[in-house]
Image 1 (cartoon, one colour):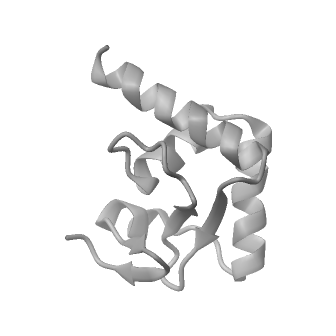
Image 2: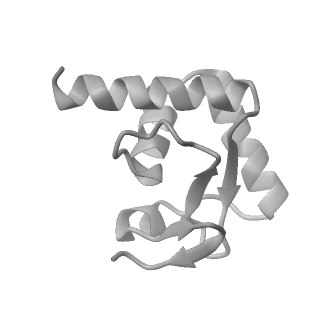
Image 3: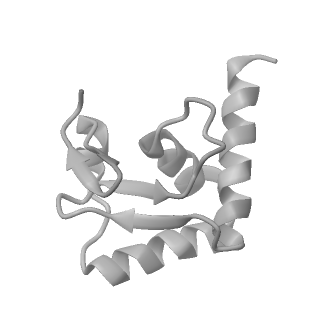
Length: 96
């Protein structure tokens, strides 16, 4: 399978998990996003999955991200996403 197919499959699995609330979107203090509980990632980063969901994902998955933004009291910052800020177990790190 080509990498594109692997990425699409991983993001589709993430969307299903978001819909079932098995995975939770979390917005960090800098405006970065992480998907807590997402284990079927196949090397796909949270930022890549976020970009894919926001461009072609289901309305319900986008609503779950909007819900996470409301819970955090801040929006996902696309500049922070581009800079590579990410989370490991609730601790937020700049790009490696």
